[in-house]
Length: 598
Image (cartoon, rainbow, N blue to C red):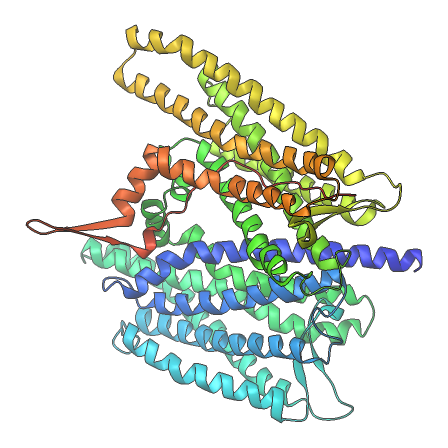
């Protein structure tokens, strides 16, 4: 392999990791928004627009799952995963699902635009009721499935596929056979974009003209609020339509502009589609007052991130939730099934790209977790010892995490894909994780990880030791001081936070220590003992949640008040757990770094 080929593969892998990261963020945003939106679909007092939003979330979620599970890993590994070539059945199957979702999305764009015009211009809400919209979607979905199936599997040309070869999507052409798939898709795309453009142009013009009228009318304030809310819905959905239009236009323009040169530019199409799939979620998170209010009231941890009266410690907790969920998904999706099947699933052996890819994601999460441990310990010291809260504000913590995540991705990528040794992999043969050693080559990955692990554990030990000593000294002082009740409660709460995060740090330390001690103790004999490493790692990923559920008064109160509805009879109490109040709990322990026998 030439140096140029190596550079191309490195660039392709980097682009794949970036696409995967963006897609995971998009998926998380859609999951967060899903709970309030689906609850609004059922609620009688909420707009029928949430039916359209719910459909958007469903097809966005499916498209993002295709990117996360197939397209991005294919780009990273430079292969058509689980298939021999681009003309195999799997790229075509995922392409079929993708286009069905795209067609339903087209219909949603059109229905949304027409809905806004009918409500704002003619104040007609009878047709676009929730029941009618659901009935409209039944034939839309059926027709989309039939139409796409005929185009993909019955017509002679040309199949739409998920194609890592062009970093996004493409057609499989057959000589000079007409492209029936594109012939059926192009008119629908054009009609959709024209409809949204015309409808939202009319609405924006109407908004400008009606603002003065609204301000001078004698109508009730409730009517004005309702009308302004309809305008807001229109603005939100118009912004959602932009990435959709860019997505399908770029898909058709790039083949004409590039013509085989600089094929990496096709990557922009995949990014545009990812933005399209996340636009709905992010706009609801940022600008929809009802969704933000719901999340603030119902979400035990993520609501505390946005609540002004809650500690900034919940930013750290939210970050831990994200990387814990990611690491546990790796166990659920790949490690556990591989152990059960006694094979490196979807790959030839332990040195294949897929175990290495999951190992890369794992270590990135671990590194972010390391920094979270350090930040949490230092945060507790500054708050308890020096009562300083000005630096560790929510805004500052979020700004700190941006470079942390970027540096972690770059650092791990260099260690995994550029340095000659030794890749960190998810390895079912040792029931956990390991390094892929190469003769006597230096293990650069371990050299970069070990100091960070040691610094993290030492920092937490020193900080929490100081805190516990301080707690013993100050308990009597607090009991006899003239501090107000509120001050004492606040101080005790900070002590409680420190204790919680201390207990969370224990399984973290055990995880990375076991990872390095076991190869020395076991030395290839009774490899089943490595299983304890995986268990320690899972405990590391769940301790945060259980600690918050058991000992955090704010989280327990939020779940009790917002997540459970109590209906009392004379002698009985019926407790109904609300689906929207399920326990999303925070944590502060990073993932795990596991090493294998040499």
